[in-house]
Image (cartoon, rainbow, N blue to C red; front, top):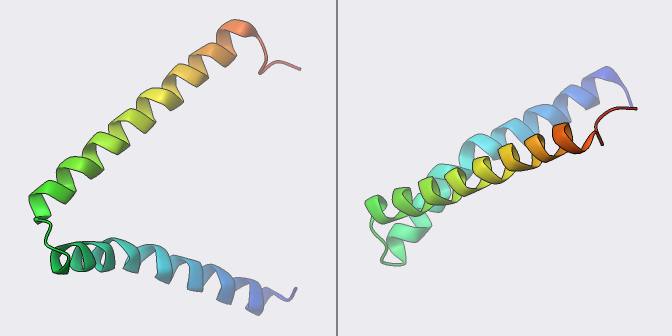
Length: 68
């Protein structure tokens, strides 16, 4: 894969990642959900994911699975 095509793939992925939140909010608003409700659920999901990631990280450190 050439450098220019690799950069184009990353740029396309970055564009999609940047466009996803506004598109999701717009579609949910059209579907009848309020923006505050969407933000509440997004915050809840993000918080649960971060807690899960931290617990997994602690478990790996304690169990010694991260050491080779």
